[in-house]
Length: 243
Ligand code: SF4
Image 1: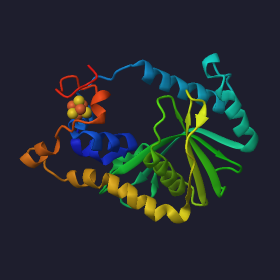
Image 2: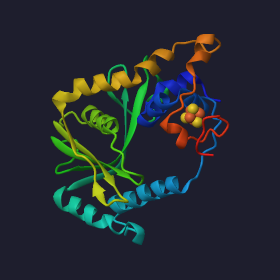
Image 3: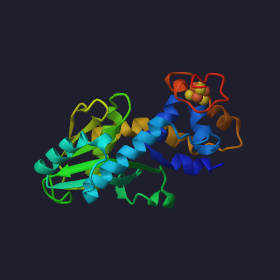
C-alpha cells in the first residue's frame, strides 16, 4: 500500500486519465497496489517498439525486421533535423510550473509535480538554443488522438527550454504506418495550456488534503463503469468486461 498523499502528489497524463476514468480503479492500482502488472502482448509490443527506436536514434542500432518500415521516417527526420533526442524525461512543479528534475517529485511542494516522457524531440539546432522543435510519440495500439497528452508535452518543452517559441506535436501510429494529427503550440498559448492542465488536475489536487480515516475520504473512491471496464485489470469488480 502506498501513501495516498505521495501518490496524488506525483502526477502524469496516464494517472490523471485513470483517475477521471474510474476512481476505484485508480485507488486499487496506485494506492492499494492491488492490481497485478499484466504482461499482455500489446504492452510487450509497446515496450519493445520504444526500446528499438531509442536504440536506433541514440546509438544507430539497426532496426529489427518487424520495425524496418520505421527506418524511412527516422532517415527523413535525420535529413531534416540535425538533432534528435529520444526518450527524454521532464517534470514541472504544479505550484509554479517551473521545470524540476524528473526524480525530484518526492521533494514535494504544495500542489505536487507533473511528469512526462517524450519519445522523440527533433530540432535543427541544439534544443537549448532553438526556437522551434517537433515532438513525436510512438503509438503501437489502435489510433485514438489524445490532444491533452500532446498539450502536456508542449507545456514541458516550453518550461524546460525558455528559448522555444513553437512546438509541433504529433503521434506516430506505427501499425498503420502514418502520422497523427499535427498540433502547433506557440509560447503565447502557454497560459491557456496551463489553465487546461489545471482543470484536469484540480480535483486530484483538492483531495490531497482530505484525511484518510474519514468518510469523506472513503466516498472519494467510487466505481465509474464506462469505457475503461473493457481494459481494466481489476477482475474482482462486477463491472469488469475484460475477464
Ligand atoms: S471494471 Fe470498470 S468500474 Fe470496475 S474498477 Fe474497472 S474501470 Fe472501474
